[in-house]
Length: 149
Image (cartoon, rainbow, N blue to C red; front, side):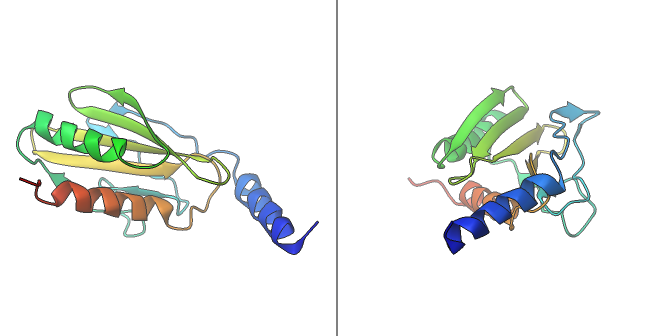
């Protein structure tokens, strides 16, 4: 086996054997998304922990307009699948290019605060090499960018 392939195999074994699953609980309970696990593979706007915390997004127009904007952004991203959409909730899956690992991304559109809360977490393993944080920064940047006229 070549060195590069062996290194890749060792990486996959480390990722999957250190934690078979992060217990991907999804959905909204008592107006909140699930908390991030202790592992560094999750970001959330509802986390108080600096290692996981990100800022929520303001509504852009109405809740419906904000939801449609998020759906358009996700729909334009590679390896994304929209799983669930309601008036106030979106669940999407993103798959990694090489190993096809799944990350769950959730959005809670809170009409009372007019904020979009979100959570992005890896299903398998402990490390995500910052992918969830980078993805949510990209989505946030696109979301806040003024619409083209």
